[in-house]
Every structure is written in C-alpha cells, then in structure tokens.
Image (cartoon, rainbow, N blue to C red; front, side, top):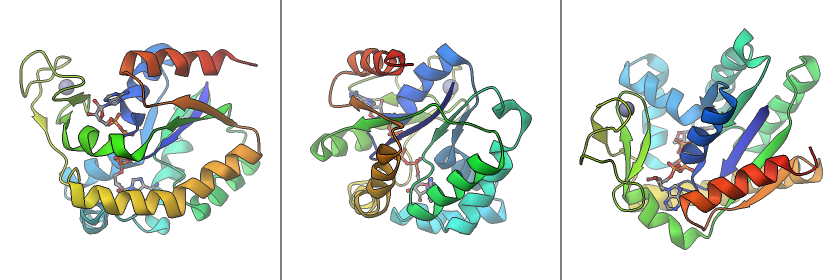
Length: 216
Ligand code: ADP
Ligand code: ADP
Ligand code: ZN
C-alpha cells in the first residue's frame, strides 16, 4: 500500500499512522519526525529547521524536498510507504508528482483527515510523545497507563515545543494557505479518501480502513 496522509495539525495523522503501520507494516515517513530527529541530534539541518518549527512556519522547500527524496528513494519504499506531513505546499506537490513520473514509486490514495479547527487546541495542548519510539498519547483522549511513561517501550513522554496555542495559530494559517490547495490538487486527480476525523480515535480508525477498502 502506498499512501499519503494529510490533515491539519492535531487531526490525528500520527495516531492513524500507527494503526496503518500495524496493518501494512510499511515505512512511516513523517517529515515532522525527521526534523525533530535531526534537532535531537543537533545536526545542521535540525538547527536550521528549529526556528521555523518553533514559530509554526514551514521549513524551506529546498531542505524538505532533499530530505524526502533521500528517504523515498531507499529500496524499502518500493513495496509500500506512508508519507505523513508531505507534501505540504504546491512546490512540494510538484516535486512529488515529478518524482512519481520519473520513478515507478506509485501512489494508491491520499487519506484526508478532515477535522473542525475548534477541536485542535485541546488535541495539540494535551499531546504527549514518547522520546524513544515516538508513540503518540493524549493526557485525556489517549492516556498512557502510567503517567509520563510510554506503554510500548517504557520511554519518557514529552510535550513538543511547538504544541502551544500560539504556534498552533501560525500552523493553522500555514495549513489553510499552503496545504489546503494541495488537498484540492490531489482531489482533482482522484486520489483523495475523506475521513471524518472529528470522531473518537476508534471510530476514525474504523472509517479510515473502510475508506481504503472502497473501490480498490
Ligand atoms: P503536525 O503533526 O502537528 O501537523 P508535524 O510534526 O508534521 O506537525 O510538523 C511539525 C513542523 O515541522 C511543522 O510546523 C513545520 O515547521 C515542519 N515541517 C514538517 N513537515 C514539513 C514539510 N513538508 N514542509 C515544511 N515544513 C515541514
Ligand atoms: P497530527 O499528527 O495530525 O498532528 P496526532 O496523531 O499527533 O495528530 O494527534 C494529536 C493529538 O490528538 C494526540 O495527542 C492524539 O493522541 C490525539 N488524537 C488523535 N486523534 C484523535 C481523535 N480522533 N480524538 C481525540 N484525540 C485524538
Ligand atoms: Zn515509546
């Protein structure tokens, strides 16, 4: 299965990616995770990306595209992949479509997690992430069994630096201006599967798998 997952910050892309990986066992390529990994390792790319991420702005395309190209051309993507957080603007979408043409990478569907913006503040400010395995939790909607500790690996949970009300505002502005047009673009090409992401995690998961089964 070859998928892109899109949606506003806090829509549930990371959470649904965990479910998809359990089923399809494909590489989960999250540009946000990749930038955070670079930052944790204090690479030049990570330190450059930090300012943009903290402000809720997009990291420049030249850096992002290079990162994705390197990852998508590795052999483990040939049989399937899940692209999360990319493409996020028109230039990235153009790069991606050119890459589809030039390689035989392929794309099955674009999963669009459609959520009302008023749901997002609570999701974003309550989000906790495992430092080790990157599992996603929520203090209210998806708590770990032991506070602050990852159920899967025992790692420490942390709150992302950009999971503040102020950074969220900027991220939503960037999403509306730059990412919504990309969703329209894929819609016209017939790739988009709509999923109502306002519902419980269980219901969104169920609907998402149903949408993938349809006309396949
Ligand atoms: P969320 O899951 O909340 O939508 P991400 O983890 O995908 O957020 O992204 C966090 C930040 O990383 C973004 O606000 C942006 O600064 C940067 N980033 C991630 N993906 C991209 C991308 N495709 N292009 C530019 N910047 C990106
Ligand atoms: P994204 O990757 O799109 O930014 P996440 O998957 O990280 O979103 O989810 C954001 C936060 O909301 C996390 O804390 C997650 O546990 C929680 N969450 C995800 N999906 C739902 C849902 N359907 N209902 C309630 N909370 C959710
Ligand atoms: Zn963990």
